[in-house]
Amino acid sequence: MVTLADILGAAGAISGVADRTPLIPSPFMSAAIGHEFLLKLENMQPIGAFKLRGALNAVRALPEGVAGVTCCSTGNHGRGVAYAARERGIRAVICMSELVPQAKVDGIRALGAEARIAGRSQDDALAESRRLAAAEGLVEISPFDDAAVIAGQGTIGLEMLAARPDLDHILIPLSGGGLAAGIAVAARAIRPGIRLTGITMNRGAAMHLSIAAGHPVEVAEMASLADSLGGGIGHDNRLSFPLCRDLLDDTVLVSEEEIYHAMQVLYHEDRIIAEGASVVGLAACLSGKLAPAGPTATVVTGRNLDMQVFTRIVTGQDVRLDDHVIKGCPYAT
Image (tube, rainbow, N blue to C red; front, side, top):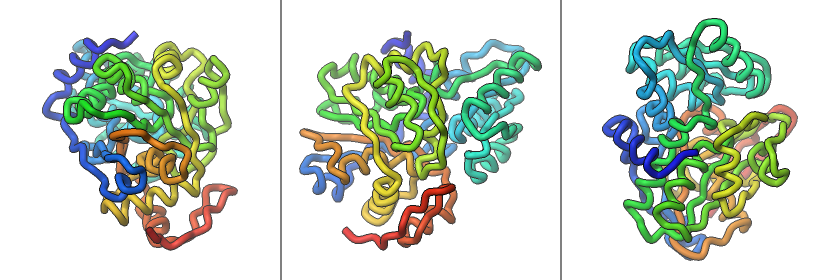
């Protein structure tokens, strides 16, 4: 399993490239919940997302002479792997489903990686990544079920608690569980009594449903404003599922409408451009599904989104997600 020592080692490995993002207060959210509310700005990473931490730690740990790397991704992990592979001068092939926004596919190609579109689910992309690893000798780097990746993401927890040792509650966007597992390992080691909540959208919530079932379950993937939280956790999940199951206090689901509103809040009140996955912590609080009892922080996970869709949201227009339409609503405090 992943330990605090692994996370401290990762902090040294990624130092100077993917570390030390700001932790800033949100006056609006602080007033809304009645306690200080802080934002960890991982959207300020060089690739625009926290995923660079884990990817960089994993790629830098590879031995010399590797043929290259591959992974499945909903976009941001692939971008991180592409960045880290370019730094090492090795080949990277990123496998994604048709649900990944074109802006994320283009960002991966811009970093010099090959982008493979395979099927309409994360499972399809994973199958292609594993085929490439077997057929072409590439090293597969899981977006969440990899010890080096989890340790890299855990450095966020180190930084948050170093800056604010008094944190009472951390709200963690939850997908495959790499981020939640890493932060949870760090936070439980440093501040055992801290409250940790994983939050995700209610359309295809794989980790939430798996924890409830007691084992990894398959979900139908659907388009979401929080697209980077989509995908399954893998039936053979070894690390992120047991860590999330054992270390998170609870998990919460938010709707697409609640994500839409929270994206408006973060933009209009804090002037921050961020993906839907970044605001699920805000959404849970604003909807009344969570009522933090002390200083609280969440991770603004990334900014790699379709700006046309983002513009529609912040200007209060309708947004279509396949067969689901989010009715527009002009922003008002």
